[in-house]
Image 1 (cartoon, helix red, strand yellow):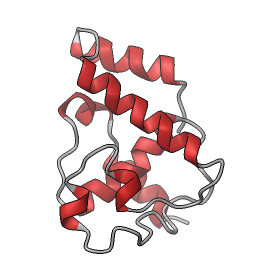
Image 2: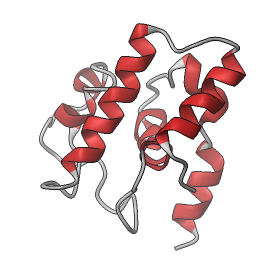
Image 3: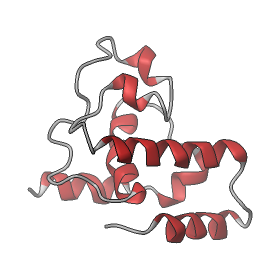
Amino acid sequence: MGKSLEDWIAEVETGLDRKLSKNENEFVESLTELLDRFDWKDEFNAKDLSLLNSEILTVERDHQRSLTRDLWDGQPEDEYSLWQYLSLVFDDRDIEIPGFLKAHTNLDETRKRILSR
């Protein structure tokens, strides 16, 4: 499922026919920051995911409860894989997927992979 960050960004920019905007780059940087947190953290809560979209804080009452427990069978090793999993958390809570990533988000495929375990 994985892709290098450089390949994924190039793929997204090609699909958009433009470079990522400042806000879009910041979103990707937040994914990188979350990926780096795996060095000391196994699960993410609403406070963690608010780096990507603060709306999660209004949807989730308990900001410390794990939102990713049992989501992956092994830690995602790249931003692309991490996003595929985290997009399910947002989608399940009716939080919109960022427009620039809609064509690069595979909700159905990721759900099938999780359910087939």
